Image (cartoon, rainbow, N blue to C red; front, top):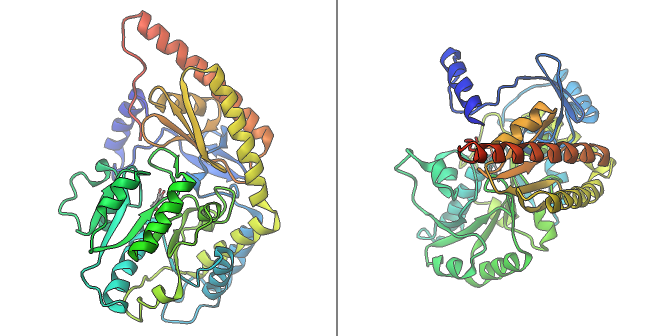
Length: 422
Ligand code: PLP
């Protein structure tokens, strides 16, 4: 958010009855269809935010809509007191796609899935292994795992923890991709290593394949569980069902959420059977988790990705998008790095990206940030090359404009374009 936008927001906050915990952009989206959304004035935007990696099939995807609509006429909620055929069905599909995980527990969000993963690690060591002293989880700098007390403690970003002490114990954070630091952090109390294969919120940082191979070996040597947070990367975002499938590993625990419900809130924790047993009846639960409407959305999402061969599309369009951005980088000194996997793409810039996001929005393209200096691009998985060309064209003209603003600011004696971001 730029300085002007911040001032406007402060004004709006004074009039609102909502908490002011979100730095919202000055735009209300009231309708979405396919790859586009419309604001209250009827202005149309190409949506490359996708609700932060959620509406992966575009807005109101027909097969998902049909499933949810049919479910709306049948049953909205029964509770986890009862059997759930739709949970069983979605769990069977997810396990088959995972290549080796056998059990699924449905929840409502990414943080809730990670909270469950943390609890499962502790409970497994405590109750199945009888190793009560082993509860420590090693996580990484720049990671993001959620906003509950345990998941924000696991998160490797100080700003997320500020003011929430005392935090739960049992977490150690080391630099990402630093093998020595990781080895040194392991103690007899270590139970698990938890990581994102592409750090999303932390700047779009993909893990190196060799490092992940070594992490997996280290887990084997020290009898540690490997927890992979696929909340942002999972369900096709990187070009495979799960990002770990590109690293040739099978984690012990995987968490998913965002893209699973095409916009319907749903999350899940997936694990091997021997681990899942640690959550015996009564040890963990949720009222809404695995709700029939969420299950219908999840089934419709998987069916669409499979039927339309969307994973192949993501691999092709992801490569195309990266190429186009690399060409842009050659012409713009403001672009420092292009990185990512599939359609989770980061453009690291020499300056805060808030102004770039603002100008792109004015030109009808929605983009977001990952930290202060990284532009994050999350198009629908069904994005076309024409839409990519259009967005890259808009970005090129925005960068020219920002460059000119920066030059005129310097000529006029003021500092470079500075603006706070979300
Ligand atoms: N884990 C990762 C990798 C995420 O990107 C996010 C959200 O951005 C979360 C966990 C938290 O998910 P939620 O916001 O659904 O609680």
